[in-house]
Amino acid sequence: MQNQRQVVDYALQRRALLAGVRSGRVGTRDVCDADPYLLRAARFHGEPSEAPCPLCGKDGLTNVSWVFGEQLKHVSGSARTPTELTRLANLVGEFNVHVVEVCRTCRWNHLVRSYVSGNGTPHGPSRRTAGQ
Image 1: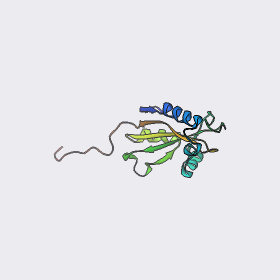
Image 2: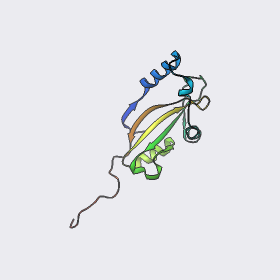
Image 3: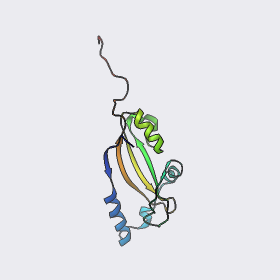
C-alpha cells in the first residue's frame, strides 16, 4: 500500500516470544489462543503468507489487517482485505492498521506490524465562520 507511514515492526517482540516458547518459559497455550472471530477474519479477509507457522510448522500463515480510526465510523475495528485497504486509503484522511499473523491450524497469532494510512486530508467539510 502506498500510503503507509509511522510503521512499527514487531519482529523483535515476536522473536523474543518464540524464544520463550522454545525455552519453556512460555507455554504454547499462551500463544496459540486465537479468538474464533480472528480465525474467521483470517478465513474471509486474510491474505495468505508463504511463511510457515513458527510453532506447528504447517504452511499457510494468514495476515489479517484490522482497521481503527475515528474517521472510519462503523468500519473501525473490523478486518479488511488488501483491496479494501487501498480503497479506504484513498477515501479516508487517516486511520490505523494492525496486521496480525494467524495460523488457522494451531491458532498461533501475533501482531506483526502497525501503521497509519489514509490520504492525509482532514475529515469532513471545512468549517467556515460567518461572513467568509
